[in-house]
Length: 152
Image 1 (cartoon, rainbow, N blue to C red):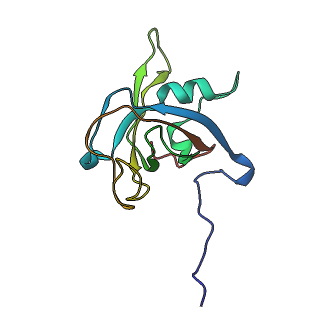
Image 2 (spheres, rainbow, N blue to C red):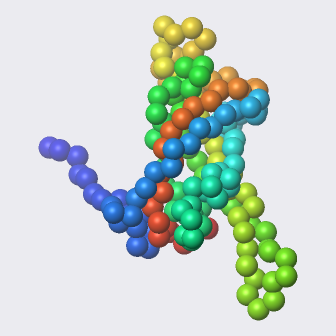
């Protein structure tokens, strides 16, 4: 018997025609990789601010639904298991009636997995890069579905 399948919901109004991707490159820049806290930490704020079309509403953190790696990292690891943290906001100066806020941080982590025991300096197939300073860089597609879940 075949496994049961269902269509996953992105949230409020996101539909197939409402999904887009942003081509991003993430560079470890010596950040401390920690397996216990989710892998390589990075901030998506600048990416969301730069990726929005001119005169469009900003990309809301809840609209980010995934990451698809486009190949291996510079050191030969496979980026996988992205996790999004809780965004923070800054109140803009001069606010009176409405309090406009701007995205201050949108933390995320991603794991870098081994590709097999035969590759030099790599863990077994289910292994992960060692904890410590990481200078890997990798490219992938950040998947955006406008009309996210309203949870952030």
